[in-house]
Image (cartoon, rainbow, N blue to C red; front, side, top):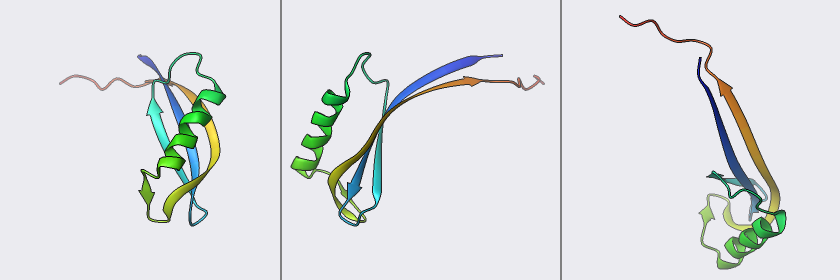
Length: 79
């Protein structure tokens, strides 16, 4: 039985239509701070480089670092 772990950074913004838009990045730097992430989010908003079906990104909504542990409980028989 294999165990795997995965850590992702989820940055959620609000677009011009008021809807949430989430960007997920794999393997965030260990020890990254909320202040560092907020600075990046502010840059993304200021540069207006992403466009969604609801318009551009207008504000920060949420930041999460999600650490997932997955245990594979079944191994398919060979043959």
